[in-house]
Image (cartoon, rainbow, N blue to C red; front, top):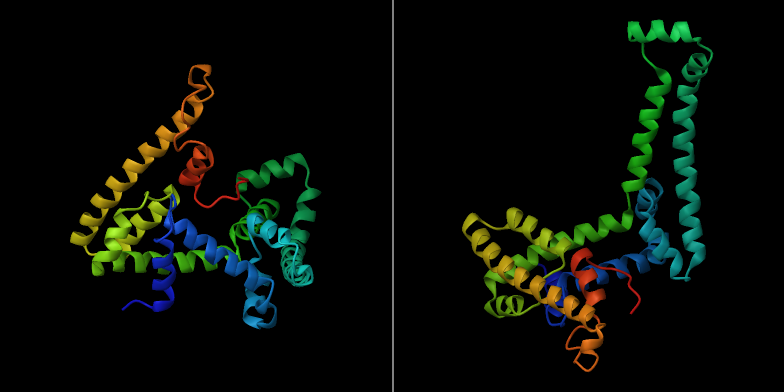
Length: 259
């Protein structure tokens, strides 16, 4: 039996009427990770080592700050993160600086000769290494990693329950599909966790469900736009009043939309 710690939230998420049960799971994991980061993680050296090394993406830095809670812990995290990263960037530059300084004083003719002889260009080498480092920092996020780890576990559990528990399978097939990012996650999970026969069966059922509900939400958005036509001023909004935010979430996954 799959770990109960994952089956309980999966079953709870699939009991909620939503455009994507996996968005509910992801939001829960993200909220827990933010609370943990600003709370208990401060006392755990291993976690501080991770945040010093990886920091957070811009979205999660904003979320951590916008909670407006425990700003001292956030300040301490940023302080030690900058201390480590500033040191790395400074070391990279100082090691490259002699070669860069030398090349800064080279005349045009010598530059041409060096180019012909294909001598090592210290400046370009430094620039490429610095860009690689900055790309690494930009893409790394302690919270994103935690979310991805847990969502992979949830995907495994969903696929397991789909084939092992008829009641869950019925609930799965009664849902309104999934957002596109989580559709991708389920497809990736099917490659990882299902055998070929199971994968074929699952993909047929999943895509039938998904395409039906993509058509549904497209029609709801279309009706929303038509309601601004004076000819429809007395018509019913049906289920279209919140079709725009729901369609955005269907396309993009979890969003911080104002409702």
